[in-house]
Image (tube, rainbow, N blue to C red; front, side):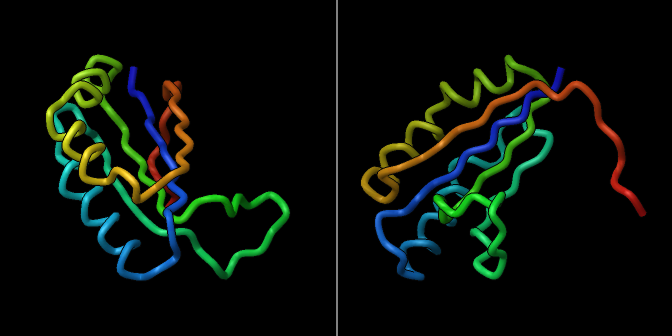
Length: 109
């Protein structure tokens, strides 16, 4: 069963330089792992102001793994550890949401 690993980082400051450096680290160390079906990283859309929209993050990462074992291998990988070390202090707050994907539909055309 595929697994979705979504995490949201609030950065230490709001500078463009920190945001760009952090996104670069995410791409360098968190993408391309064996068993990744999908990877994306992005920054929060500032133009949306709805009551239901979370605003307590600056950068989001979304990874779908082919199964729980692929996620476990990623989580224990040396490159994941390098990300944690190089990004230390850049993001004092992070929230992680993990879920098993029960169904999938192709996108609407």
